[in-house]
Image 1 (cartoon, rainbow, N blue to C red):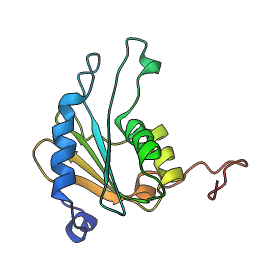
Image 2: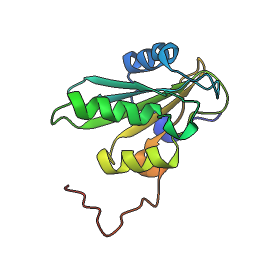
Image 3: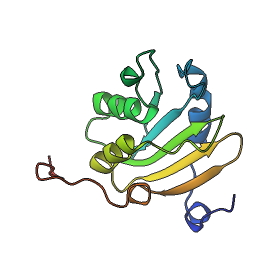
Length: 145
């Protein structure tokens, strides 16, 4: 895959990349066989992680990005997320689902997102709005809430 200009000009945190890849063994994906991990890096350099957790009742499973956001909300204090690393070793690039894209937009719209696949570097990088160019901003949504 050809590197986008953003990948070439944006510094990738190798520690976060290695952490995201190491976390894949913690994912629980017996139904899809598609483990995913997510590492959020805040402006203080702290990492907040999550993995996907599937259930036989498919709607009850949770995405790695959602779990990482919950971890950050529980332990991140008032820090800001500056980078998101999403990893998988199987299948197509682990692009976030629509729900996770919306959550990222609402909680850290200016963060850089790096999609990692296999042993290669970032397959895709961009900011959250590159992933969700037309986010839902319904009548009850407030950026400052």
